Image (cartoon, rainbow, N blue to C red; front, side, top):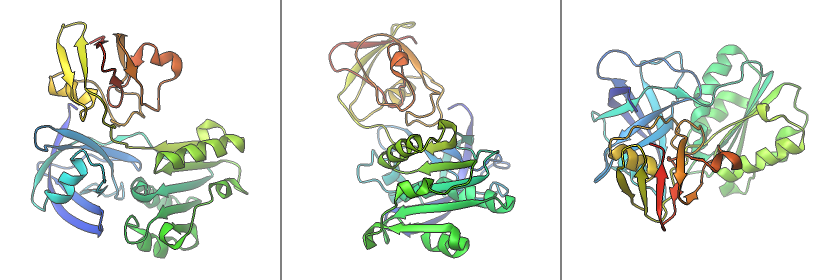
Amino acid sequence: MSAMIEVQVTDVRQLTPVVREFSFAALDGALPGFSCGSHVQVVLPIEGRTLRNAYSLLGDPRDSGLYRIAVRLQDASRGGSRYLHEQVRVGDRLQIGVPSNLFALHSQARHHILVAGGIGITPFMAYLAELEVQGASFELHYAYRSGFTDAYAAELRERLGERFHGYDAVAGQRLDCASLFAGKPLGSHLYVCGPQRLLDELKLLASAHGWSAGRLHWEAFASPEPGQPFSVELARSGQRLQVPGDHSLLEALEAAGVEVPNLCRGGVCGQCTTRYLSGEVEHRDHYLDEQQRSATLMPCVSRGGCSGTLLLDL
C-alpha cells in the first residue's frame, strides 16, 4: 500500500457491545474525496506484526472533512478488531490508505435493493446519503440481532420509514430472501453486504429468477482464515519465507519487503493475483475460476500446502 494518509482519531462511539464507530481527520491537509461504496485500509500495528484491514466509509461522500468507519469486535479476531476496540482512543494517530471503490452504485439502475447482514450495514450508510440526494428509488433490508449487531437500526427506521425493512433474529424475524425478487420493476439491481451464506443464497436466487450477473453486486471483507504454516520461495530473487499459520501469504510478503498490489485483502477483487510456478495451493478466494487457479493464486487468502515449498513468480 504505497499512498498513505496520516490521520488522528477525533471521535469514538460505542454503538453496541460489539460495534464501535471511529472518526478520522487528516493530520496534514484535507482528506481525499470518496464515492459511496468506498473503503479504506487501516494500518494496525498490533504486537509482533502489522495488519492492514479494509473498512467501508460510512459518511456522506459530499462531506469528506472526516472519515467514519464502524468495526465489529470479531469472536475469532486475529487482533485487528480487538486492537481498535480495546486500544484506540480519541487523539491517537493512525495510518490509512486512500479510498478505493469496489462496490459502487450502478448508474443505470431504476430501483436499488440494499441487503445488509449485521455489520454489513456499513457501506449502505454512504449509499443512502447518495440515493436520498438523487431522489432514487430504493429499499433497505437489514438483518441483525437487537442489542448486538443492530448499529444504526433505530436511526434508519426513523429516517427511511416504509423503505426500511428490519429483521431481528432475537425476535425470531428472518429475512425471506426469495421475496426480494418478487414484483420488482425492470432495471432493479440488488446489493448485498454480509455473511457469505447470505451472499450465496442471493446468488442462487438471482440466477433462479433469471437475473443477469450484472444486476447483483456484493462486498465482503472477510479476514483470511488461519491454516497450517508453509514455505514459500520467490523465483526471481531466490528468497525463502516461512508463513506462520496465523499470517496470510500477503502479510508475509509485505513483512519481507515485497509489495503486491491489493485492495480488498479478502479474496474478492483480484488485485493481488500472483502467478505460481509449482507447489500445492489451497485456494480460498471468490475471484479466480478453475482454469486460472492452475497457474495463479491470491496471496491475501490463499495458502500453500504444508508439504513442499510453494514457488511464486516474484
